[in-house]
Image (cartoon, rainbow, N blue to C red; front, side, top):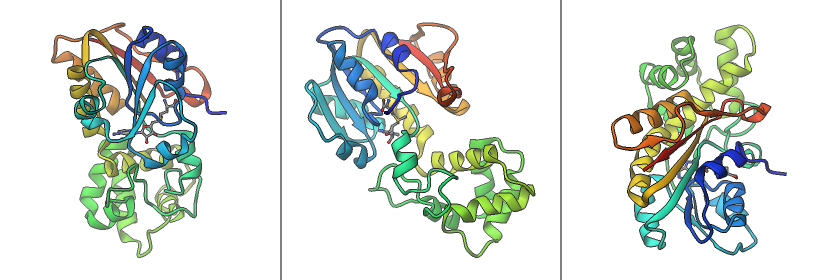
Length: 269
Ligand SMILES: C[S@@+](CC[C@H](N)C(=O)[O-])C[C@H]1O[C@@H](n2cnc3c(N)ncnc32)[C@H](O)[C@@H]1O
């Protein structure tokens, strides 16, 4: 069974009204959308990954599901008659299905998968292309900025030194070589750093937030569930420079094991 992160808290904070229009900007496996619909809302579901859309096989009443980038949320909302909307929810990152079944090398636990890491298969830039295209210093900057891993310089050097970097195993073994031992937390940070860069995730979040504010009505809400301190910083800075406000000063944090790195913030227009 698919268990979305912070589901009850996200839906409660979205303040769903019967007949209201909501945009689930990162549809995933649809857990949030289903709950919004259960509470009487109508949903525009957006996902960048076409497989997430195709996997939603049964038709759901009051759900309009489309492939797209939430960076274009304003355009998508207008085109699909969800402008203005009562609320928008962004549950960032990846779903378990993408990690376990996509075959795109998102997880360090899948040694034989190619280093692809694209969310949108329309995009040409894979993690492998990125590693090949960048020089050691540029790769170091991605690791250092997006992962804050202390051994970023040495890992970038080792990755660029290797003749063969094609699959997940090649990257984890380069990390092992630098550290001298296996470290899941370093793998996780380096993989996440690459994925963020391949998919331009931080830029998409900034554009998504700007668009969402234009899309929602006065007093409408934007709920963001993030998994990375850089994402949370973007949300905080975004509100700081506007007339928007947070529902609560402190973020709600995940408690269960799989959601412990999650932070939920609610913005009110
Ligand atoms: C953590 S999952 C969402 C899970 C969802 N709340 C649920 O209940 O199943 C995040 C989803 O956001 C999608 N995504 C990531 N970046 C996106 C973007 N820029 N635009 C649209 N979807 C995006 C991913 O493909 C993934 O399916």
